[in-house]
Length: 271
Image (cartoon, rainbow, N blue to C red):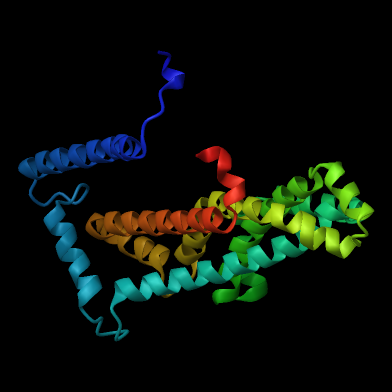
């Protein structure tokens, strides 16, 4: 049997996926133990006990300056910024992407502008955003929106524009207006694509969020990572990075389940 024809079962796929993670974990534990055997005060590869102790202070103890538990305050601040930004991206993509995809005139007029914005490195705009919007929440949210929305709009517009012409002709033959074509023909086919685009955009969105928080913020996961780096506090940085990864995975799984449950017809080929 050829390797390309071997398809693992669901449980088998989960087992295979766990192997690299376990390998990384075991390698880290051995490397950490070896470094601490030579230098008990080593900070580069903290032991699990050191990370648990450091995180316990952030998770369970109230900070005397802010009156909050820092870990949960950072998590709430970052998720709020990310949630607002992705919500704006979703709404703007549905509005602009659908218009560009359904109406050739709009695509010819605004398509070039969207493309021009999409190719600008968002991080390069961060100083401009801070100057225009100040150091508050607006600039951080705007960075994520500028970095993610143009990509989603282009992708959704291209997907809608590739809808088979036969479907549009049949709908118009039955008397459908442009508004009905957008809502009843294009929108149902655009939604799975939009969710898939959001899943692909989670990584860049987190990058923009962490970058903005690192430069100007008083709370957030990115803020905390860059605050403690001056003290070489890897016992805080590593758990925070792992927590960000878990949050991103949870968001990706949630979006995948939403797509499968809401638009099962778009995933028939996955079974």
